Amino acid sequence: MNEFKIGLMAIATMAMVAFMSLKITSNQSGFGDYVTYRTIVTDASGIFPKTPIKVAGINAGKIKKIELQGNQALITFEVLENVVIVKDSKLQVKTVGFLGDKYIQIIMGESQDKLSENSFIISDEGAGVEKLVKDANDVLNDVKVMMKTLRESIAPEGEVSPVKRILNDFTKVAENARIATESLKNVVSGNEERMNNLIANFERFSEQIAYHTDDQEQDSAMKDLRKILANADAMTADMKQLVADIKVGKGTLGKILVEEEIADEVKQTLSSVNKIVGRVSDIRTELIGYMGAGTEEGSVTSASLRVFPSPERFYILGLSSSDFGPETEKETTRIVNGVSTVETEKVIRKDVFRFDVQIGRKLHDLYIRGGIIESTGGAGIDYDLFNGATRLSFDIFDYRSGIGPNLRLSTEVQLWNVFYGKVSGLDLATNDRSALFSLGLRFNDEDIKGLLGFFL
Image (cartoon, rainbow, N blue to C red; front, side, top):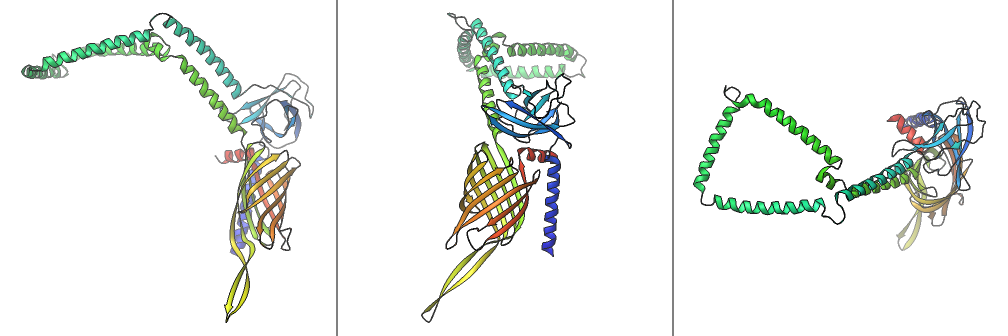
């Protein structure tokens, strides 16, 4: 009875997660009928299926698929029917923030004629972080020219630079300080009594200072405090003006601080940040989770993460568990009175956990992979049909002595949005064939961002 209750709770939890995922990730622009349009861009990096389409900053649709047409990318997308797209509208690929994700913005034109279904919208490329970096490079080039002109003006060719003159003067000051220190040492040596008198005089002077700073004494100097504060305010204003002049490169110290190398370092930093942003935006992920029941293994739960650092290369990390593992045989030899007998015992492990670590390549809709499958070596292939709505998989793994490898054939079918059904056949090359029926969820980058945005 407890297992039955736990099963009901698991099914209810999965149904709630599926419902929330469908509400969040279905098409975040809302419900209704959609009209399909197309466009062509020269660079589709960072854009994937389900990338949002925005009108006036509000989600109005999503990308259905991206195809390679010649040397350009053909994008097919859909927009809510109640959003009127006119003929002279334009399309821009924009970025959310400096390190954010990309989306497509439709800029409405002034025409009164509505664009027909499956028509092309002209793409206005050059917006986003790339344009910002280009403008920053232009500004830095202008700064570099200005710094070169300023350097030539403060250090003319054939003359001693102001910095060198300052260093020469500083050397003279240091030499004078050394001479003064030696003279002071000669004065102090043998004049201890005079020094004691000087200290006593200093103590009397301190008492007088304390008297004049006591605001309870009528003849104290506290009445001059306002004049002193006024002078301090004037000094502060002069200091602010001095700092402002240094910032804009005025004066000798400002000329030292403002150098051409600073502009070069800023330019290199912006270039490095741009490369990092491009690499991060190209990474795609796919999170898959299934729960089901098998004819031999009992209840089965699995979860896997596919990471695509590039469109043609991917990695798989996975973990699965089941009530019962595969059946194995254990042979025991017993010797009684010189007679040996062999006993064969069939062993089935309970509560089995298995992990996957695979690497693969993608060729259009075909995936070729290999590595560790369910804690044993193996390889497999996948093939997507109907734009990824159906996936056929074949795996070979877990070679067993006397039985051979486990051949598994699976079919995944999209039931609705991120909700999938899966049917698998196990040990197809042996007489111990079994079947596995599962229901689960599959999330891509856009689905995960929508789900995290809902909770956070």
